[in-house]
Length: 482
Image 1 (cartoon, rainbow, N blue to C red):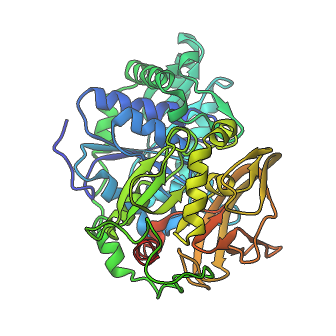
Image 2 (image 1 turned 180 degrees about the vertical axis):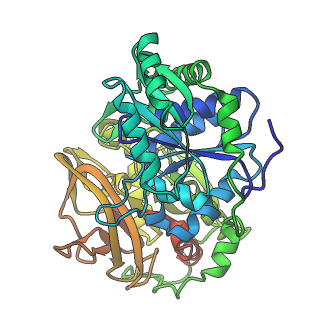
């Protein structure tokens, strides 16, 4: 175990694979947990917009799992955000996304694991599903090693190896490639994590079972991988230039545009409505939805809200019948409300509180799952009724990065603001946009989507506020002035 790093110099590895389904999550999560068990302070990271894998990473390390997405945040923020998350750690493990060189559709290497590895000056460990190959593994690995000379593949971990004889054949073939085998993992059903319509089941929904799964991953990696060699490889990463990202500094360097009119169409007289306007100490309470139904959030959002002066308090729409005391604004991120529709609907008291808050003009920011929760109904079950729209499950998966433009002024952004986001859902909201849409998406059909009504901004689009810190300041200022 080494001394804790500043973030810019912390040892680091990128766990990648030739394709999805090769075992990246098992290896990355298991490695994080195994190193943590040996006393390392491990910083967990995930390439791309995915929210679920970071939950397993957090369970493995005891630290917030953080995303590194060059599309959502820009390539220039990848290293600073990494250094921010890795501050004070002994080692960092970065789980890749899809295949090593797969990025945004039609965007070349943008947002790929390879691009992030280069931006982090980090060596790559390639996880190969060897279940259906022998000597061909050498050709596969050789291709990935030689494809981009700027990507340094420093080791291979062979996954789903059938037997000692199978391992012997694989190692013999790889001798000619010159990349060391740093681990061999046999098939192990106990480390498999259950999936459903949007991928793995989140940690928050599995509790004790998730703990057991992470423990099994750690045991498999500890028993099948050369941890000393992996740590040595991580220590070969070069230092990063520039400072670590800081929420407070990001807000200073990105001042918000002027706020829209506080009433936004809600006529009222005098001062703020009861229950709004912040706490006596000047720090408005921003209630952020959590619990099993709302597990999707980026750690930087809460950090930016706090840096903007808010007191961030988490509430669980499945359990809490009241919003946190003094709530001035609500943020409802992504998750799986469709799985918990009946329980969310049964919590009528909280649904009414949120509807009342929204009706008074308080700022409410909702993404994806939050959008569904604010609808009149979800799969026929009553929701908050903030929006005159209904939501239902669909067979069609909507997935992909989006370039977006704010159609009009809102509590998050003024008209014309450009942001990048990500859609990932199997639900449909009808209508798909209100009379004042949230975003215009720069897709071939130039569609609009989402709702801006009063202080409400509700949309399917997941955004990363580190790319536009003024969003958080604007939201908190609206909490103070509503």
